[in-house]
Image (cartoon, rainbow, N blue to C red):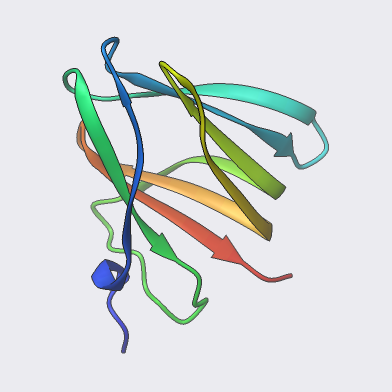
Length: 103
């Protein structure tokens, strides 16, 4: 089975230890959500686009979006993801997985 660690991307940096997630949520419309980190710095996430990849139990789903997700840091737009379903998982104050799923 494939590992969730196969693809890792930088998703932004912040002097406020936070990034902003923005996208449509199922039956809620457009929403923003703060993604806090343990300290200021540069952040990365594992990108999972294979539905067969298992997300480990120590990661907890903190957000789900549909169609698209934009991530903003202190300087503006950093990432723009597109998928039918997008789940964001966290482990502790740094671990992050962005899961991009088809319908």
